[in-house]
Image (cartoon, rainbow, N blue to C red; front, side, top):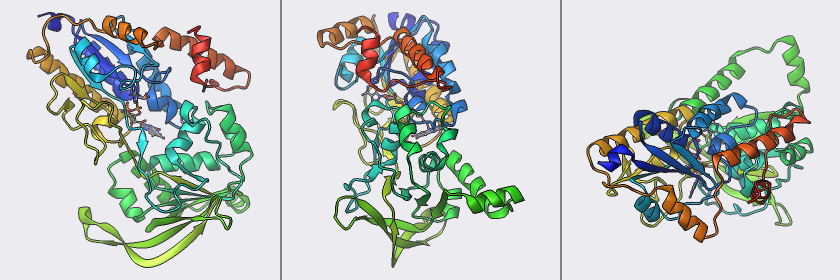
Amino acid sequence: STQEKTPQICVVGSGPAGFYTAQHLLKQHPQAHVDIYEKQPVPFGLVRFGVAPDHPEVKNVINTFTQTAHSGRCAFWGNVEVGRDVTVPELREAYHAVVLSYGAEDHRALEIPGEELPGVFSAWAFVGWYNGLPENQELEPDLSCDTAVILGQGNVALDVARILLTPPEHLERTDITKAALGVLRQSRVKTVWLVGRRGPLQVAFTIKVPRPRKRLTELLFRTATEKPGPEEAVRQASASRAWGLRFFRSPQQVLPSPDGRRAAGVRLAVTRLEGVDEATRAVPTGDIEDLPCGLVLSSIGYKSRPVDPSVPFDSKLGVIPNVEGRVMDVPGLYCSGWVKRGPTGVIATTMTDSFLTGQMLLQDLKAGLLPSGPRPGYAAIQALLSSRGVQPVSFSDWEKLDAEEVARGQGTGKPREKLVDPQEMLRLLGH
Ligand code: FAD
């Protein structure tokens, strides 16, 4: 049948999940055509906007994604927000199958009094700010205080603590934005506390994400067991910046400054563990501790947003209900990455998971479970987008922006100076 000969497939989201799903489909099916839709004008999701600027080696996956995008059977369409510019039913009409890989962009609220005070941010927004995510460029965090408190002890919390405490000259040759570097140069933050509800062993051994578990455990053991050499001892004695972990503490309230205008501290309830193994829970002991600080960053987890009323959504877990990537009760609709599994796991986990979704889709295709007959693919969507005044950004457009960013970084020894204004990007492309 036609669909088996030239299946038209689209993927929503161009982070690791989107690109790895596309890669699998193109490799395993010699005729498949894959269009990747992305709401940002630029590709790569959290590889560009999440991964810390001082971990450039993690971003090497971009080379593989670029190879995928260069396939004659793959196209990238940035600046197209699914759910706003085009709907999921429209995509399902135009393609034989649709894969949702749009990540987990919502952060969980603290749900405590004082959360709305100036000086309180989600760690997510802070990461987006220093990594050039357009919607977070207005954040302008005030770093004139000497203590910051991060609520949460996962890998994002560790990244944020590191960026706050790294001497700015060590970030100068990374792709951190010029604006963020400027603010960090003026920073007076000397102490960062990472607050967690449970204890070191729970963080270190029972959470499900291997990476922070490994990192944090290594860090804990190194700090606890290694004696500093003479040079390190001198450095530590004179070090102006420090961080620490506060275990068994649960946030109760963000405390206001005397004039009530901004955050001045966090009230923490001391907790203790009850139960054994998997059933262990942190319960309050009744003791309270106030931790003064001028900056509060909450990093207690992310969740996905529903993208379209026609797509089933589990709002409690913040994921699309699915069985191995097949969206429940909607034939021809699939999901991969964080929107499928929830926001845990590194890029490698996302890769395995996306290959699996690709495999399920191809199985269904082979079994004749996808619509038969030809589908118009991008031709139909292009017409819709143009009637709505939406101008997609192609992969070769992105390569022009990429070259511009690299050129702007050259003068200052940075790998790139990211463009942070979508309007400017579109202007540079003559859109
Ligand atoms: P994402 O990467 O979020 O991609 C989703 C894409 O969908 C985005 O480009 C988004 O713009 C797009 N999108 C959203 N909504 C729409 C819509 N409506 N229409 C069209 N497009 C849409 N992993 C590592 O291995 N190493 C690290 O060092 C590391 N550091 C990290 C640091 C941070 C701060 C975070 C948050 C994560 C980090 N990770 C790291 C984890 C890694 O980023 C994730 O495993 C991976 O990005 C998840 O892939 P994804 O494609 O599901 O989601």
